[in-house]
Every structure is written in structure tokens, then in C-alpha cells.
Length: 106
Image 1 (cartoon, rainbow, N blue to C red):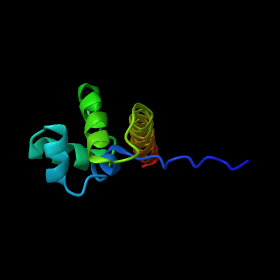
Image 2 (tube, rainbow, N blue to C red):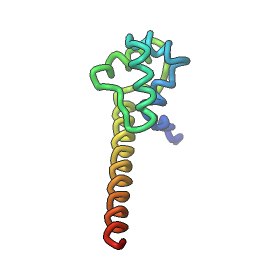
Image 3 (cartoon, helix red, strand yellow):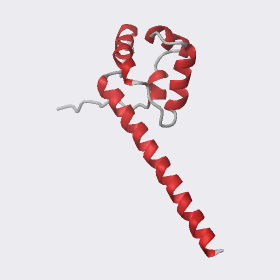
Image 4 (tube, rainbow, N blue to C red):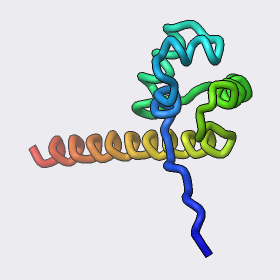
């Protein structure tokens, strides 16, 4: 029995990048260029596309024949963003501990 291929996990920047251009994404989803660019830029880190746009985003992907945009993929992108946020918090906390230790030993 063949195994079904699971689609790759995408962050929000990659989801925006499924369209041929930011302008095409803007037209499809109905958001200003600056909004889409901010989602794309923030999506490279821990940014997110606000949930109130998800229905529109899923419908636009279907209309444009773009695969991989679904409620499941958007939820996966949230998990990616949350993991990045947690990693950033951990890095910051680790840096604070090192600074306190360095100050205590000086």
C-alpha cells in the first residue's frame, strides 16, 4: 500500500510566497501591498497572518489553484511561529543569565 505524501510544513512567509508575487497575493487576498509585505517579512521570524484573514486566504488559494493552503497548514504555520518565539525567548533568557553570571564574577 503506497504511503500518502505529507505536504511540507510552511511558515507564513512561505505561504505568502506560494503566489507568483506579493502583488498577486495582494490581489488574491484583497489586502494592501504594505500589509502583505509585512506579513511576509514577519513570517520569516515569528510573525503570523491574522486569523481573520484565513478564510479569505484559503479561498484565494483555491481560486488561484495554489495547493497547500488549508486550515491545517495555517495552524502548522502558527506552531512554527510559536516555536520560533519560544526559541527567541530561550536565547534571550540564556543571554540574561550569562550577563548576570559575568557581572557577579567581575
